[in-house]
Image (cartoon, rainbow, N blue to C red):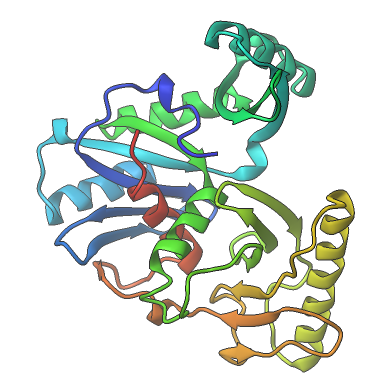
Length: 310
């Protein structure tokens, strides 16, 4: 869901810094010259003297001076911590009425008091003369409080919080030309992530399904066959949940932790999609300022968030 929770952080500032913050460390991305961006990476260090976000922001300020009041963070939250639900509601309800229904739905899924839930919703349009679809996103408020506390320590504000899978999708779609992937992506397509191995099925620009992947590295043909079979199984399961799905899953992108595989891998006769591995070197336009490069997934997530506006 685009810009979810954004209405809780009004006052976005001109210079947006995209943030990945998770088990792979902290990665910041900020647009620089017209065709490039600056990327700062702070690997996870258990005994660090100060928070990783603060260290990364200090380095970003030193390398890319900009007035503090002109900086805001656009932060990716792990999709596993976010619940997304479509609701069909009677047309004509006010935003306040929709918000009350959304709170009831959120409490039904998270067994905590309403004040401990942070939520947002998008009115996605009418489905009939009498009904409309509302897309709801919510999580525990303590996660938002943690993000705000980290930002306060770094002396910056937060303007947008969104799911990491949305940011990853957006970055790949916007960068497909630089990646040499030819024509724009056709939905549905898949992404095999690297930090937390999973299959992300992109059904539309803001509709996704995720499934755990049991193989994090492809070292030989047998491992690739096992991965391909997992993808086929998950896609069949996905289609069973949507009886009207007639489109094939024709492409799956593997991020660079899945090393050892060929750059391009063709579909087999069993109807499996074509697989394409993306390496860090393929993503151009970045000014990297670290000896240790961030994982491609972290960099893409931060890049996707850097393009987010209220």
